[in-house]
Image 1 (cartoon, rainbow, N blue to C red):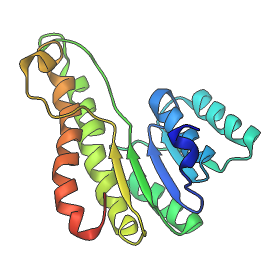
Image 2 (image 1 turned 180 degrees about the horizontal axis):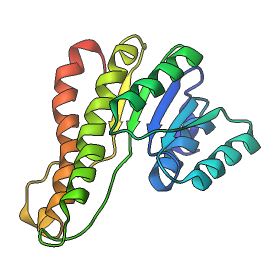
Image 3 (image 1 turned 90 degrees about the horizontal axis):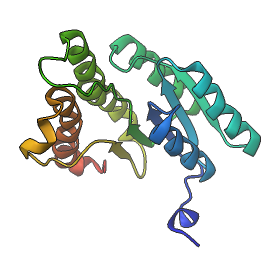
Image 4 (image 1 turned 180 degrees about the vertical axis):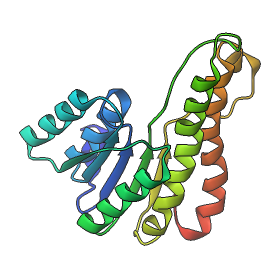
Length: 187
């Protein structure tokens, strides 16, 4: 028996940003397989979102998809309102949505810089902030950010300063929110 076979998320609602491809897809399907209602959002790839929904349907898992730009407050508010209206709760938030552009400083257009920071750091902060009132009503609330450990060595920044800054913004949310939300029981 592996570790995930002992986990049971029945009755819980997990919201996963960037849940249609890669790590997000795996996380979405793992929560569904373990009994949670897995709500995932995606921004562009309707084909990937449909594939995740089909895998879940084939197994009888509860999965729902929303097309949402996590950098936009009205879209985030609409998503959270829809999830709470339909399921009455949010127990787990996984901030996985990220924009990536791996290039040096001279090769990074400001449009890409802005996109990475608005999705990675701002989106993580905003979705967490807007989910908190609902998470704090859960008996075992969690926020998980898919981001690197805070290691301030130049080797992690030099090849792609803008992207590293945006991802480390997500990591700073982990560090700060973990301590800030500890008294409220949010892990």
